[in-house]
Length: 80
Image 1 (cartoon, rainbow, N blue to C red):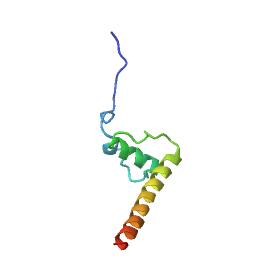
Image 2 (cartoon, rainbow, N blue to C red):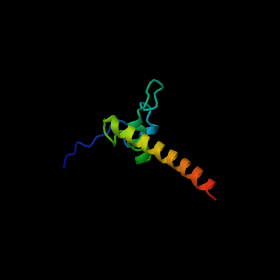
Image 3 (cartoon, rainbow, N blue to C red):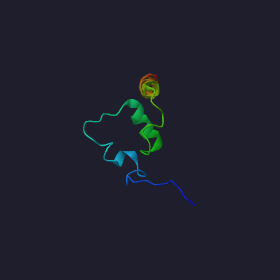
Image 4 (cartoon, one colour):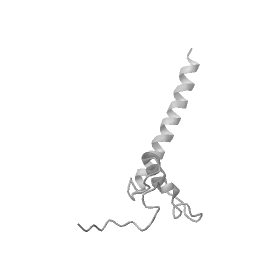
């Protein structure tokens, strides 16, 4: 049986965040890549695809949750 399963790069199977090409100083990650790394535990930086709207959505969702939590805390602590 012949297989074409050859991985010449030793970093191919490791997490993305520890690969030397990902950690180059000139490389800046997008919000989409950051959320992909967060959701996959650093294993994949393209899990959400290349559409930038997903990164913006999760960033805005996180900010909305934080703001509504802060406003809710202010309102309910001042009522007592």
